[in-house]
Image (cartoon, rainbow, N blue to C red):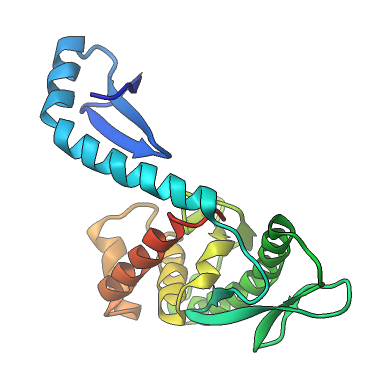
Length: 223
């Protein structure tokens, strides 16, 4: 069994998670160490398999680099990164155009800034569209750099989206929008919550599967 970090908390069960090549075990406050070790032993094959995948993803992330001529996802379609004279980066519907002579890290940072602007505009429009249908209106719509969540909804009614969701297809983006709007009424994932989502997107399960496909892709890219 590889080394792991043990985190005890007020929980009822033992769990194992693997992220960035590291193993984390979470256990109840007073759970015996021997019980934890037995659980880990039972999960050893799964842990080793997932750890191997995680390390491979880390290797691919480290090798990830962008250059002129590469393609980027935007709303489910691929667009080329092009060099264009001038100091400003942008998207013109045909390509991501960037100033010339940027290094790989500068290209990535410039593309992220463009993605942020595109995400804010499109997501705000879709929140307005579905908000009218669902009669649910957030106090604000923000775009952030979250990596672990596509979206979130605060108790104050603010909806936040990761800019990365703008890479997904329009169907998947709409699913994330409806998902977060539904949280304005149900701050959980109860059956009532999913009924709300299904009322407006009957094929939400299919869209969710597509979202997981994007998640697997981005796990190999250093965004």
